[in-house]
Length: 81
Image (tube, rainbow, N blue to C red; front, top):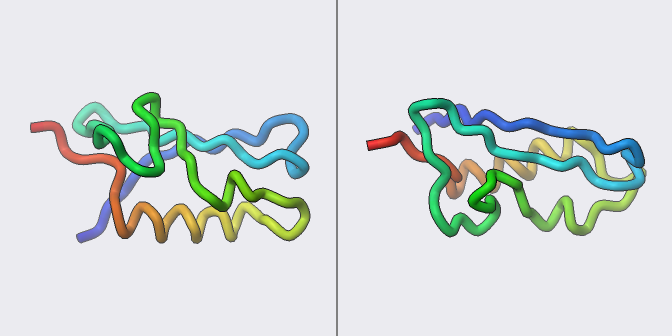
């Protein structure tokens, strides 16, 4: 199955020293899965790549690949019943 998972990516002023902040933003027909391993109930994304962020070796492209891999294996949203 193919999933389109809307996310907002914020680059805080200290970026790239500090990691981006990512939120899953479900559409009107979606809900965030409760107790998802990498997404809080507020939509904030928690993943090792962000917590281990070290500039300049960590990049937005690698972050997107990691996010795609994590969400591909375990999507954080589902269609509302």
